[in-house]
Structure formats: C-alpha cells, structure tokens
Image 1 (spheres, rainbow, N blue to C red):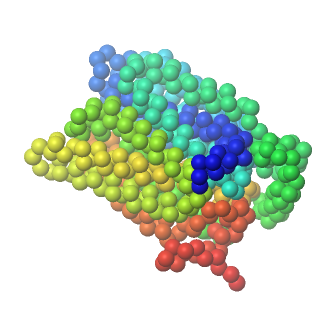
Image 2: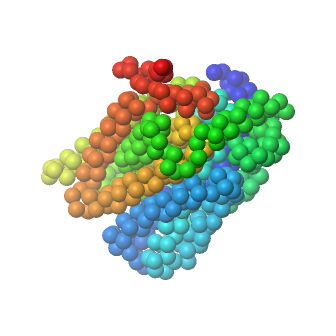
Length: 472
C-alpha cells in the first residue's frame, strides 16, 4: 500500500483508531506496573540503605504475586462487562493501579509491596480482560487486526518508559512518575463511546446508532446495526451465555485455541525475561551496562510491534504467529547455549556476551511481531458475543497461572541451577507452540465475526497449512 493509501485508510478509520488508542492506554498503565520490577528490585537488593529491605527469595514473590491479582482482575472483567458495559468497568480498573503506586511510593516494609503488586495484578487482569472485547466490538472488519495490535504496542511503550526512567530515579520517585499511566488512560478513555454491541444487546438502539455513527464517521450505519442486532438475537436464542457454555462440544476447537494461546505463548518466558531484565543482563558481558541493555531491549520491542499494526490485516494472523514462534525459538536457543557454555566451562566467554544479547534481541523482536500481538486479535474474533467475556476470563486465568509458575520458578532455577535452565525450558516451550499453531490455528484475516466463528466451528488444517471449512 502506498503512503497516500495509508493516509486515506488512517483518515477513514480515524475515530476507530482513536477509541482503540484510548482503550489501550490501559495496557500502557498496567505494563508500567509489570516492568517496574526490572529497575526497582536491584535498587532494593543492591543499593545501600534501601527504603525497603528484602531478600532474593522475597523479591521472587514480589514479582510473581502480581499474577494472582491478574486472575481476580480477569474474573472481575468477566463478571461485570456484560452487566455494566465495557466502559465503566474499564475505567474502574485504573483504581487498583493508583492505590498500588501510592503504596509503593510510601512503602517502608515489604508487606505494602506485596499488596501493591496484587492490586497491580487486578488492574492488569481487568485491562487485558476488557480491552480485546472492546476493541473487537468497535472495530470494522478491515482494521480489527491492526487495532488489536495496539494492545501490544502500548504494552511495549509502557515497558520502554519504565526501563528508560527507572534506573535513573530513586525508588520512590519511580512510583510517582509511573502514575502518568492511569492519568493518561482515565483522561482519554472517559470521552470514548460504549461498545455498540453491548448497547444493542441491552436494547439501547439509539445510543448504539450514535456510537456507530461516530466510530464509522458516517450516518449510514443501519445495515451494520441490523446485522449486529440479528447476530446478537441469534446468539441469545441459541446460547445462555454462561461460563458453562464454553465447554460445550461446539466450542471444542475454540478452547483448543485458547489453551494454545494462554499456555504456549506464556511458556516462551517473556514475562520472566521482562521482569528480571536487568538481572539477566548483569550476567552478560558487553560494552553496555545492564540498564542500557534494558533500554535497548525496550526500544527494539517498541519498534517491532509496529509491524503487526500494518500487516496483521494484510499478511494474516497465522503466518505472523508461525514466523514469530520460529524466530523466538532461535533467539532463546542462542541465549540458552551461551549461558550453558558459561556455566559448564571454566573458560572466559565474556567476549561472546554479544551472542546472548543478540539472541535476546532476536527473541523480543520476533516475539513482538506475532506471539505478543496476534493472540488478542484472535481472541476478539473466535467467540460469539454472549460468551466472549467468559472466554477472555478463562484465557486470563490460565495465563495468570502459567505466568506465576514461570516467573516464580525462574528465580528458583537461576539461584539453584543456573540461568541456562529456564532458557532451555523457554526454547522448548516456544518450539512446541510453533507446532500447535501450525496444527490447530486457522486464518481469520478479513472475516466478519460471524464468519470467523463458522470457520472455527468447522475448520481443519491440511499439511500445507491451508484452512478448509468442512461441509456436510
């Protein structure tokens, strides 16, 4: 597409882009909390006279308990967004983050750090539970993949922000500076419309019409309004919309995809690598400091996630996921080999430190290009509206359990065996994810939500990776 073509596309869908950016500022907000541990924990563990004294074991719990809060946040999203809408539960999700930053800024004992991290997790789970649903419902078929990619774009922006500021400001100051996340989100999203899907489901047709007219930038929305209303009425007549519905045989393929995305993607170890980035880089000998390597890591991620924004609706979800998994495996393998050689031999391998650093960059680049982004586009498409929130809650619970195990055991494995062990586990997990994506995830590019659900219900994948819709 030419530059003028991109400009025309941007102008045509600008209100959808604007609403999506405002919504995904919530992701910026919660990723600041997630990345906080990378620059903050070294200050508590290694600097003299820290405001809070902790041990290495306590630090691993401080990092990992956020995933427990994430489970509650996802459950909050699943229980509220069909009853109260997408907008107001979304705005409420910022309150635990605000409370958490206040606690960290004032903390003088580790208990407040634990409580703050759990609160951060609640916001994290709620944001990730609501954002894919909201974006999937407000976006046109032509840009749904691109705007879903904003989720990861904002995530990497939040990480880059904390990595760039955190090493150079005091522990307490980092907490107050990070308050910019919830302020930006609340200030922007308060002006955005409610999801038309929710309004139509509640019989608030005039409100839904006004929201659609603003989002689509046209008065001619009757056809979409009628189609959406019929789709919702059909889903209501066919399904009760409870969590139990997820486990009906008709959704077997959908659940396979949720398991692949929730477990496989997290087994790549990205959460652990981001949480302990400075500690990992401290074990690598290069001309850059560990803080500088963290900034490079964040900047590279930030640039890389722009690619799915432009190509998710052109190349397709499935190819991006496959290339991303393959590249992530190569990057993790380089890191695993370096750390293994470093631990297993008495030779000085410091001159080869750049190998592991390049491997980590390859990992974050390729991970960001697909595994970090495309799952949210897929999750926003593969379930009908009546159970979409429950599906996202299930995804969040599974992800939270896996993240807790990965993040907690990373520190244990690093201390008891060596950093090479978790890197080998991550490499194998990513290789398995590639296999499962190839076997079980179909292409959904350019399809309406109804078409996607029909494909998932009857798809199979042949050896050439083509999606075939089975017929009677």
